[in-house]
Image (cartoon, rainbow, N blue to C red; front, side, top):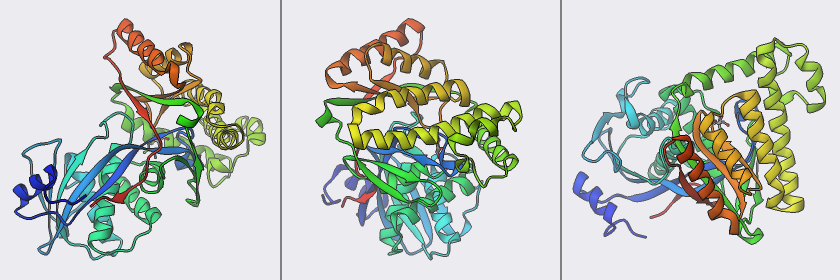
Length: 384
Ligand code: GAF
């Protein structure tokens, strides 16, 4: 693919007066299992999805960063890279600006750029559109400025951008999934040392479909609640004298729960059992194939609903309806308080399961959920 002659290549030229030097893409993700484990130094098992953010970009020599997004037609945000500071950029532009600020803070001598962003990752659906945006810009800058960053280094910088510039205390899963995932495989990641293994995942070959049911709700408490949960986990680890909850073995869980204040008990129980579910999921996947993941997904949802309490009526309804309609397993994916549910379904049942969930939402008076089919896709790359 070349950038000149493509529709968005033309849009770029019309906006900025010259052609882009290239196009870089970074995908969203769904997490199969391992929720709220990454910031506890634990394990996760995401796949990248085909939907991605694309950054059309060209270096500028004058230190100016110009940003446009096809989602906000007509708006051009112009920033001086030397003057970037946390809190200084509002809205969607904070994410790309954050990456440039973080690169400069880390000592990389990067300057300005003209950037046009395009995305088909549904926003607010719990599919990591923000991480995809950060990773697309990090990948573009890595190439344009010849930084030589490895994918995991770029992921860490993108996470820092979100933590320190945007102010969201997220873990590393979403950026690693976007940077490192491969087509046809799930990513088994150890969030402590970032060791990663690509676990083959052939859904079609097993006659399975992974439905993504976007509830299209995002409850307001999401941001504050995420930070509070993270703080609760850190407090529990400190009370137990552990570096992180990852260091609590399932066998030691009952004794440890007895030492904790009541409010921390369900948090710790979720994190420890969820880490164990990730390890069992990989084992099942490799021994028995993807269908064996079903019960682990459903158990993961129950833990998020009853212990971690990051589900909500809409995600509970989607997951329960999918299982009742014949899904092998279903669970909410991502940070929670809305967003998407994944359901693992025999392909011949996929339509019926999706219809059952749409019907249940209509009966409950909820907005119609959006239904996608996820296949494990490749991570961030240069496309032109
Ligand atoms: C969000 C965060 F960004 C991730 O780091 C992770 O903690 C996830 O919620 C929950 O597993 O997507």
